[in-house]
Length: 422
Image (cartoon, rainbow, N blue to C red; front, side):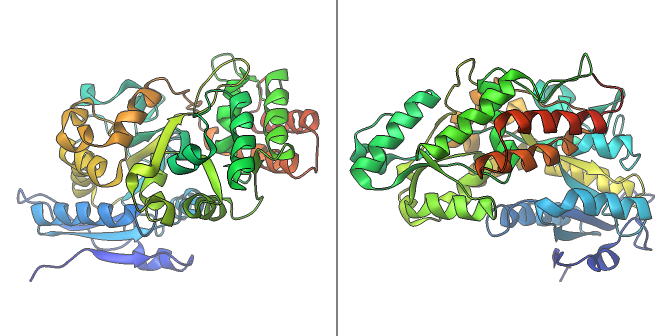
C-alpha cells in the first residue's frame, strides 16, 4: 500500500525541524522521467472546513505521482507569514511550497525567499488567469507565485431575521444603521458584528469614504487623509449608536459565533467564511444565508481584493516536484473542485464555466464583486501596513483614541516603514 498524505499540526516552533524540506536529505528528481521525493506544503486554510478539501486535493497529486510524498502541514494563518520568513532566513525548516496571502508574495520575493516561476512547470496557461489575480504574483518583472483563489468581501445576512424585522438589505451605511435599529426593535438582536481586531475588515469603510492606505504610483502615504478620518468616525458611530457590536480580542471566533447563533443579523466577511458559517444553527438550511455587496459610504462603494497564491521556496531541494504540485493545485480541475466544495473563487477564467462553479450561488455572487474590488498595493511592505492600522482601528473602537489621532499616528508609522515616501 502506498503512503498516504502526512498530516502534521504545526503547534510550536520546534515543528520546523520535523517538517524541514529545503534543508534535509529528502530530495527528488525526474532524471528517470518520473517525479519522486518529498514535497512539504504549508497550507494556511481554515482547520475543520477548508483544510479537509485541500488535503484531499494533495492526495490526488500523490495518486498521480506515486513516488512523491506530500507532507501536509496546516499553519495557522496568523502565524504563517513570520514563521516562513524565520525559517527561510535560517535556511532550516522552510517548506517547499507555501500558501501565501496575496500581500505576502512580493515581500517574500523581495527578500529572495521565493523561486521565480517563469518558464517552469508551475506556470501554465498564464492567459487563463484573471488579470487582477495574476497582478499579486508579480514582482520586479518576474513571477513568483501562482494564484490559487481570489476573494473580496460582502455583507452576510440572516434572511429570516431580516424578514422578521421587515427590513431590506442595506445598500449604504445610513441604511445599515436604519436596518439595525429595526432589527433591534423587532427581534432584540444587534444588527451587525463589526470585527475590531483586523484592519482588513476596515478597508471597505475606508474605500467607502474615498480613502486608501497609500498611493504606490506616487509613493505617497494617504492613510492620514481626511477620508480616513471620516472612515474612522463611521465605524465608531456604528458601535456608539448600537447598530454594531465589536470585540477587540478573538474577533474572528466571536464574530462567527455571534452570526451563526443568531446573536447578530449581519457580518462583513468573504467567501472563506461560508463553509464555517453553514455549520451554525441559524444556517442548517443554507438558503437562510444571504450575501450582498458591502454598504457604500458617502463617496463610494468598494471592497478589498484578497486571495491566496502558491509559491515555491527558493531553497527547495525538490523543485521539479514542487513546480508540478503548484501546477496541479492551481489547475482548472482543482479550482473547480474547490469552488464546488468550499465556494472559493477560482483564479482561472475557464474554471468559472465548470459546473461546480456555475452551481455555487456564492461564487456567482462574488465574481462581479471581485472584478470591481480595490487592488491593494503590491509592494514588499504591503503585508506590514496592517499592523499599525489595526492598532489604531482597535483604539478608535474602544475609545482609546480619536479618529483624527488614529489617522495621523498610522500615517507616521507608514512613513517610518516606507522610507522616502511622502
